[in-house]
Image (cartoon, rainbow, N blue to C red):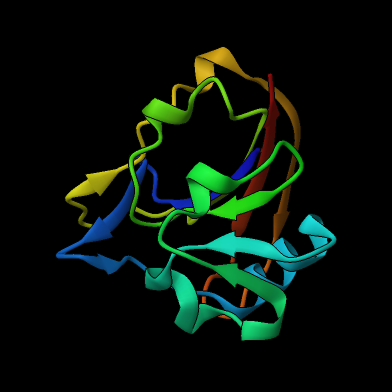
Length: 131
């Protein structure tokens, strides 16, 4: 499966059970990158048009190798063997966080990196890592 994450400079994803930030253009980019529906948890449902996602509590467990899963509030280390690609959106800022990604990017190779202007951030870096 392919995992998409939004992180701050320290890998932070959540603070007080809330996402650190949101960006409409980033979501559009993710949907274009996925070229199909994105799997999400109910926590992320308010970010997406429901016609463009598959929402379920067990989205990571049922994802197949070609599915793109947008992850904001789940630990991923138990899915390491299933993850073939990581799409990392970097906010390029230091935010407070109390929940961080547990993906070990040392097991992946950086395939591409591009910067773009978002709706809420002047610079978002999108990095794609593959196994």
